[in-house]
Each structure stands twice: as C-alpha cells, then as structure tokens.
Figure (cartoon, rainbow, N blue to C red):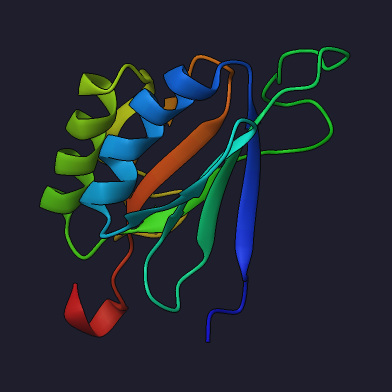
Length: 134
C-alpha cells in the first residue's frame, strides 16, 4: 500500500491539464482512471493516485515560493530517465525551470530537472542512487 493514497492538484483548465499531465503520468506507468466534469484521475497499482480538479473561480493562480505547494519529486531509476521525462514534459507544454543537471548541494549523486505547468505547478524528476550503487 502506498503511504500517500492520492494527490489532488487544482488546475485552471481541465483539458489543458489533461494534455500536460497525461503524457508524464503515462510515461511513469499510470493509467487513466475516472473522470467527470470537475476532475480527471490516473492510477498506478498501489502507488499514489493523481487527480486533477477544475479550479474555483475565486482561486488565484498558484505562485511557486508562496505558502502552500512547493513541488512534487518523482524518483527515477537513472539519469537517462530524468532526461527522458524532462523531454516528455517539455513536449507536453511544460516549461523548463531547471534543465537536467547535477545538484551537489543535495548529494554528489543527485541529478534532477524541474518543470512547471501553465498554472505554476512545479514537479521534479530526480535520480539519487544510494552511494553503493552510484
């Protein structure tokens, strides 16, 4: 069982959200789940379900660095996977915040990229193997 059951993310445009999230989530092994007029979901066995919700008209766009959401990091099995998912995200309309590179301030093995969607939601693809397997 996954430690985190599901993650809900509010987006300004549900169809644009689908276009941006679906390629990444399917590349990570997720499958389309249920949907209705206000939400779309993806699941991957016992892993955390991902759900996009349509925004409330009283909501303001998300801004990275403000109180609230910081980012979600997906652990990859290799640097090549970080590069591949970064390219999938860019092809799906995400904006590169940081291109794939090493982050020695985290560890001498840390390699990651960061992207944001149209709503300012930031995700990271990262590879940080244990010291023994680096």
